[in-house]
Length: 293
Image 1 (cartoon, one colour):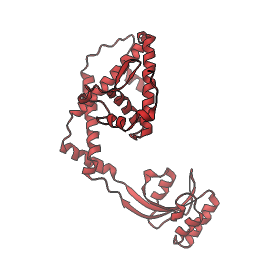
Image 2 (cartoon, rainbow, N blue to C red; image 1 turned 90 degrees about the horizontal axis):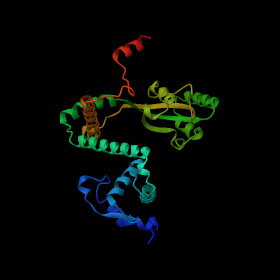
Image 3 (tube, helix red, strand yellow; image 1 turned 120 degrees about the horizontal axis):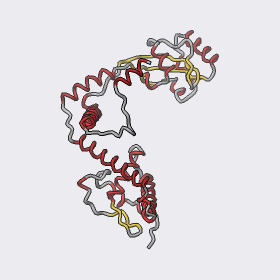
Image 4 (tube, rainbow, N blue to C red; image 1 turned 90 degrees about the vertical axis):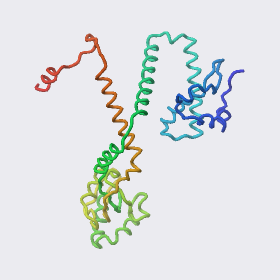
């Protein structure tokens, strides 16, 4: 019987359960699983194959697994299968360009598997963690600001509002923001809460950094959003995450560095014979000559 695609029926609870009963990326312990996802034109296709395909789609969706994504991925998988079967019928695998692409894909998969294997056997010591954490804490030092702003679309109006702020030494700022400001912060009297400079566009961030608590921008600041009158209320030094909270990210960073170092070592140790008719490397003399020109 020809296969009828009924995604909502196929992607029922039992299917979703089978999909995630093992890691999304098929691992060695799942490699011998003979569970089929479908038989298409007489050809059986294993669930593990779809798991790997789905893992790629899940990564593209930034990990947002939803029934809609499962449905869309399954339909894409079906399209992939029937198109690949058609290529086999047409004996397209015999073409040189197709063979080259298949060789490249094989190399990429093997390379990724090798790097994952190296990463899995790479240890991260407590001393390494503490050393990197101290560097991280130093780099994480920053000032956070608590401010309000009045946003308008006209420079002259912004200047007039800045003068009104000055007359009452900013004691009327919240009221003026509610009455005049554009955007979602107007109802809150222009309150922006706590932020650091990286969260704001550069002209706004630069203006805030020049203020002291209690000061405001007597000259309005222009950004792509309009004209701002800014009142700085407080500043504080941001607290970096604790070692325990930062540990997963730090471990991953150390492991990546170690894998990169191992890859560089393997490349340096590789016996390479270049075809100089195709590839010519610059020597030091060539580089020095180019630099002096």
